[in-house]
Length: 248
Image 1 (cartoon, rainbow, N blue to C red):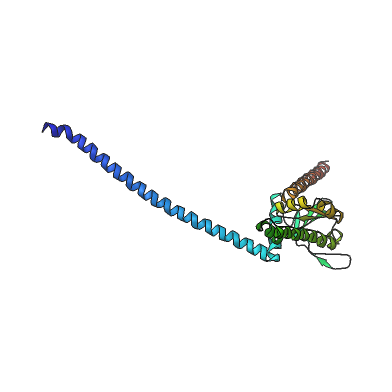
Image 2 (cartoon, rainbow, N blue to C red):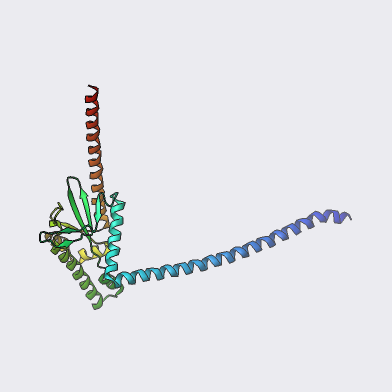
């Protein structure tokens, strides 16, 4: 009886410990099962993302219209990120006529104070660039590079021939911004053909990418902010003068 009294608490402690161990193993088993399920879901999600990325690439590479729409979307988001508003500081696909009456729709027209404008057109050369990136070193890769450079130069020539800066109703500088949304593609083009920017500029085309264009657009947004502040100050001064005259 004395031994039972002494050992009973110890027995209870062992039973509690045993129960705790069982609960811990049970919890760990459930957590391992949950973790396994989550890992499985992550694998499925990763596969879906890979499939979606492949589908997007195939869609962009296979369809020139889709490429163009994608480039315009990237450019529009860039304009909005710089603080410009559609219908206010910029217009998309706004129709204008040239001196012969032919109609043109530049991708984007950025408004400046004093009724001045900047024309920006998006040009995507994804197909040949994608082929270049996928191909291995050798004649095929060199051929893809040549096709890519020819594509960029063709975009420059095509855009130059439209003479957007001479459209009626536009007061634009003697050049048009040609936006290339794939910055590595442009860097590769200038690395292989260092004279490309100068040759394009001589044709009235300034080639820009997201990083270079964003800086220019932020400057435009700042100019508009100062312009609006000046206009507001003038309006306040005018109203104050009217109020003074009324008091007099």
